Image (cartoon, rainbow, N blue to C red; front, side):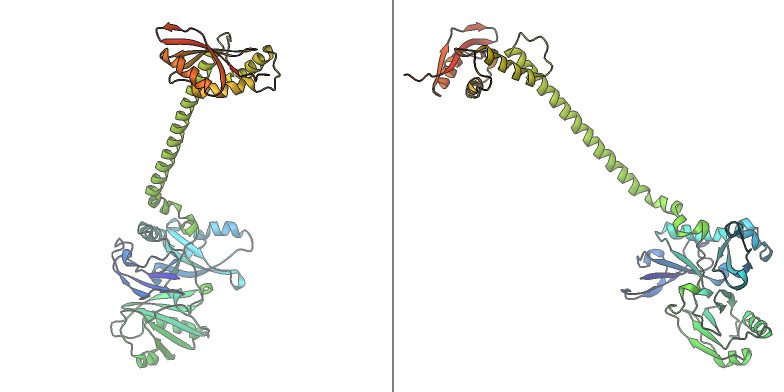
Length: 413
């Protein structure tokens, strides 16, 4: 679908307060597919937008191009049309069309300030057109005929693929003088049109076709109101949104509307990164705590070790060492088996003070909260079928320290 907007010459000066005619064409067009909007907010939200500007918004002319250095010519095109304008070349915007015969190129000359205000006003309302056409070039054109579009007291004349002028209607309904002058000039050049097709836009009064034909001496056909200009080929138009006003160059117009989304995105990124670093800090603190706890437990069990760099590896080494001293095969699992049975039965708050493994079994010194915990621990081990011998314990300020010798029962022969 294409949304086509028709704006007036004074529309940007009014701040967009003038009504805007709109037409939606293509598959899936809404109903209604045309209307007149007092505010741009009342226009259907369709991203594919074209703008039709009044015929008076730009001068259609042509220039002869040099045989070489086309890139330099396009950069200095404003000065190439200097003899056809009265304005300062720096104040005009020149859009070019396709190269024609004899190296002649059609051009449209518009006021840069008017173009800038129009595009910025549209952008302020969230509208970013992909093309902007002059009203006369939006009219259908057929070989050998001219086209006239009338809307109230103004109009546009299209005499060729890239040729046309604005028209001012006469109060008495007579043909515009510019149209008569154009016909007289065409007759001098033996290029008189075969007919003039008139398209009545919204707000146009009915015409007396007979009077027009008598004054112009050319057949007249009237159609209207013109609901769509689909007959006008896109190749026969000249998109004046070029150079600094090209759609791909309008980032400066879009940026102001991206401030709030960009701010929200930045806040989301900051929040995500902040959460990540907080989680990383908490996990690092927990890792440090567990490492310190493991280190402390290792030092309690093996107080003779002066330097603890890797408690897990050092624990494995000490276990193998103890097993070797006990004359046990390094692959034996008796020591670990005893630990696996004893550790889950530790009374609440029990902490190992020392551990040694020898031929008699596992010697274990525990710091307990009460002397009664020693008997509870011994009975629990015996309940698993282990041989348990408990030595007399000693009372300390922090609790009760007991020593145990734990071994597997030896089957009687």
